Every structure is written in C-alpha cells, then in structure tokens.
Length: 129
Image (cartoon, rainbow, N blue to C red; front, top):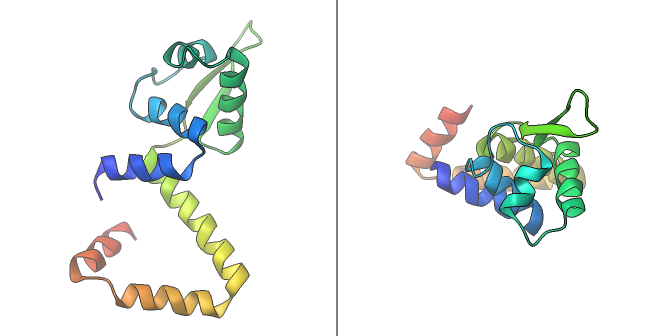
C-alpha cells in the first residue's frame, strides 16, 4: 500500500474536520511541532476555539501528543505517528469490536477473506506481521 493510499484511508476514517487537520499535520503543512495558531492559519475560516477543540479531541484520541508550553496556558502539539500507524491501531480496535459483537461468525468471515487474497496480497500481509 502506498503512503498516499494510507493517508487517504486514514483521513477517510476520521470526521471531516479532524481529517482536514490531520491531513495538514501528516503532510507537513504545519510544522512537526505546532500550536493552535499554526493550524488556525491554515484554516482561516475556522474559529480559533474550533481549532483548539479539534486539536484537543485528536490528542484525546491519541493521534496527537499535547505538551504544555512552559510559561503559557497553551500547548505544543505533534503527530503521534503517521497514517499507517493510525490505520493499524484503528483496524485493531475495529476488528476487536467486530469479534466482540459477532463472535466466531466474524472470525469465520475473516478467514474467508484471507483465503480469497491473491499471492501478492498474502506476501504483503506477511510483511506487515
């Protein structure tokens, strides 16, 4: 899977605003370390408080690391991994939820999907382990 594919899939998993913000973070539109003001400058039509709330929610979800700024009420943010890491974590959560909901029927469905993989897809899967 190409890096661009990971980015598009990861952004698609998030809500519209969170996806836009994380696209800016993951593509380097904002610096590696950034503050609310940096993101607000990228999205001038959004209220400062909207950007601040969105960054806090992304930090609460584990996509961003939020570090208090010394001598200030603000925080410095940075990505907690890239799109591929986010997709791996989100996939594990979703798979666990599906298994909890559907039990062995879900496991049987996963096995069926694995058996339908092409040799190239199987090789890629082995590389991911």
